[in-house]
Length: 205
Image (cartoon, rainbow, N blue to C red; front, side, top):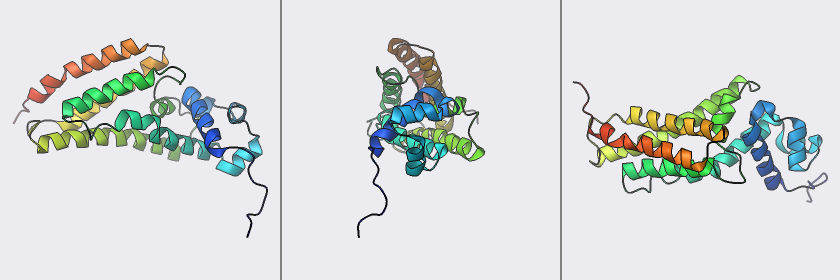
């Protein structure tokens, strides 16, 4: 039986990517419906029919960001041969991604959280969970290194993961302020210089 109703006259995947770029550049609250529909090349009724609401569109845009842009930053953690290489790759990929020409600077998830005044409590909670998931990924990689004997048993994986993700989030703000790739890479190198001290630290007993 043929599908009822008039088929959509736009490319949904392309429209979603354009919406993602608007949210990434402006944040949730500052991205107006006029901004979104203009970028997506559709009218407001088509947006609501395809995505339900502005919040529904934003949630899909976040998922798209995580599976595309975010994957380039976080996707190499498990494959890295050592925990140090994983952290170095994570920070280097961050510097590259946050300053890539032709794309909004910084991280969509971090910057959306900073500019979340127009979001409801459920969306704020989901943004917090997204950020916490990144910390958990890095912590799991560090815990694996402890299990494999690369890092000492007393290595504070939670604190180290918090530290390096905090550095990354700061790099996002700096990128949005106009810091070039060279400046972000220098921040990454400074943070990586702390690695030997963290790995050698013996907790108080």
